[in-house]
Each structure stands twice: as C-alpha cells, then as structure tokens.
Amino acid sequence: MLSLHPDRTAVLMSNKTVLITGGAGFLGSHLCDRFLDRSFNVICLDNFYTGSKANVAHLADDKRFTLVNHDVCEPLVAVIPQKVDLIMNFACPASPVHYQKDPVYTAKISFLGALNALELAKKNQARIIQASTSEVYGDPKEHPQRESYWGNVNPHGIRSCYDEGKRIAETLFFDYQRQFELNIGLVRIFNTYGPRMAVEDGRVVSNFIVQALRGEALTIYGDGEQTRSFCFGDDLIDVILKLADNSKLTGPYNIGNDVEFTVAELAEKVRSLVGTKVKIDRKPLPSDDPKVRKPDLSQTKRDLNWAPKISLEEGLKKTIPYFEQKLASLKS
Ligand code: UDP
Image (tube, rainbow, N blue to C red; front, side, top):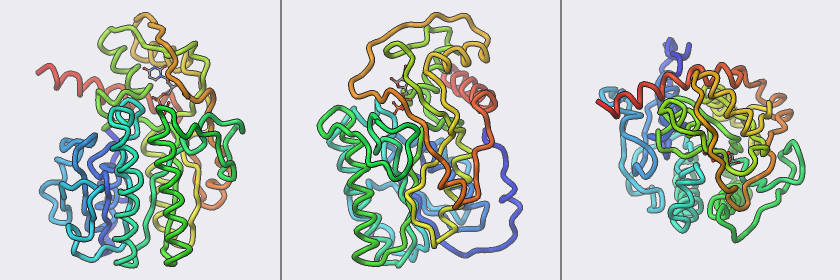
C-alpha cells in the first residue's frame, strides 16, 4: 500500500471542500486520502465504470467523506448542491483497453465530464484541476515532450476517443479561463502505476506483474523496443497537490518520471523482481501505439519545486506485494 503520508499528522482544520470526480479510481482514491489528511471535506464522485468501491471502502466511516454515485456525463450542479472550493476532474478510463471498449462513451466522458465539472466550478468560483494526459502528444515527433509541443495525434484512430477527448477538454479549460476567468490548473499525466490499480487494468506494468505472479507468459506487444517512462503513484500525487495548492499556476504541466525504459526492459525487471522464469509471448502492436514517450519535466520542476523520487525498481517493489495480496483475495 502507499505509505502513510506526513500530511496525516496535520492538525490544521481547513474546512474546505474538494470534489474529486473519478474519486474511486486508482489516482482519485489516493487524492481522497490525501485531501482528508489535510482536513478537507471530500466529495468522491464516481459511477464505478473503472473505479472500485474497494479503493475507498476504508473511508466510509469518516464523516468528512461523501461518496456520490453519478456519471459525469450528466450535469453535476444538481447532485452537488453544497459549496465546493476545489474540483479535481479525474473521471475517465485511462487504460487503452478500457477507454477503447466503449470509445463513444470515452469521448463523452472526456468532453461532457470536463464541461459539467467546469460549470460547477464556475457556479462555485472554485479552482479546478484537470487530469490531462501525455496522450495529447500522440505518437510524438519531439522527444522528450515539452508542454509547448502540439503533438502528433491521429484524429480518427482507435486511441483518438481518449487523445482527442483529452485535447478538447484542455481547450474547454482554457476557454473557461479566458471567457469566465475561471481559476484552472492542468496536469498532463505520463505513465503511472502503483497500488489500487485494478488487476484487469490492462496497462503494461499491471499486466506484467499480474502475469508474472500467475506464472503466465508476459505479453509484449510489437518488438518491445517502444519506450515509456514510469512514475510511481505517490510521486505523482505529491505534484498534483502542489498544483492544486498554488492557485497562481495554470500549466499545463507534464507530470511523471523522466527515466525512460523500453517495454522489453520493463518485462525483464518485473521477471527478476517477481523471481520467475515465465516466457515472453509476442503479440501484435496495436495501431497508433506511441513509439517513444518521456516527459520533459523542466517546467514542472522549476515552477512546482518537485521531482520524482521513486525509481522504477523501488516502485515495482512496492507494487508487486499489492498485486500479490489482490490475487490472493480473488482466490479466497
Ligand atoms: N504493452 C505491452 N504489453 C501489455 C500491455 C501494454 O507490450 O500487456 C505495451 C503497449 O503496446 C505500449 C506500452 O506497453 O507500447 C504501454 O502501454 P500501456 O497500455 O501501459 O499504456 P500507453 O502508454 O500505451 O497508454
């Protein structure tokens, strides 16, 4: 599990209310914990499309925690009548397997979810943070990717529902800032992993760990030479909170880890850390799969005084026991 954060010792009562859409998801649920640690009232809104009640079950008895079962494609104003001071818009499936399952719904969540969250922020005059993604860069021709890069995105491929969805969401955010002077912040999240990912998440880190633990072959798509830079969840949550706190900063900010690995290198690391000799099963590379990805973090490091601390090896060592437990609980 993610370690207990020093914020938990905070005694200062903030009396502020944060709405976290997608609050029962992998990242959203960690945000719920951390905002409660900071004495916020937390409204966690989720329809459990990919989020899980188990991720927030430990918060059920906390009087400052409210769980609202709602789809962000429907207006939020009616279901959140109370005053909110901050909105974290994190509702969206983020794994290619999940966002491609119902691409029209993914596009709707990306656009309508952002629109509905922005409308609520406007009504409350609240700061609002958008979980954007490295996918806005598509299959990048600039490497590493800086925030100033406009990307190389296929507008009608199998990843477009998510890539273009998140791009139009960024557009909406900036238009609400320009048109209504809304206080916005945007993070572009690069590949992230850690406890509370679903066993069936489908992304590469969780797939490899789950496969290795089950003694199954690791599925490498394509030749395995494509690269990603993997960030442990704790590191990412730290920088998201920093941006939420600093209402003078807008971004967009790249957030993630800037140490790059090939997918084949990741497979080797997982095999050796799990301590198994499972085989590699080569599968076709899905279309539009980015060949390289690594964030240029210089702007984020400078403005937010942050850098990722947890190496891939350390992060995997914290994540493997989580999946071990999850798999054991599925058996029992
Ligand atoms: N991938 C893989 N095996 C898997 C899952 C993914 O080789 O079981 C590859 C995928 O083709 C991509 C990379 O790993 O090149 C990262 O995929 P992921 O789904 O984690 O996220 P993406 O970065 O593509 O959004």
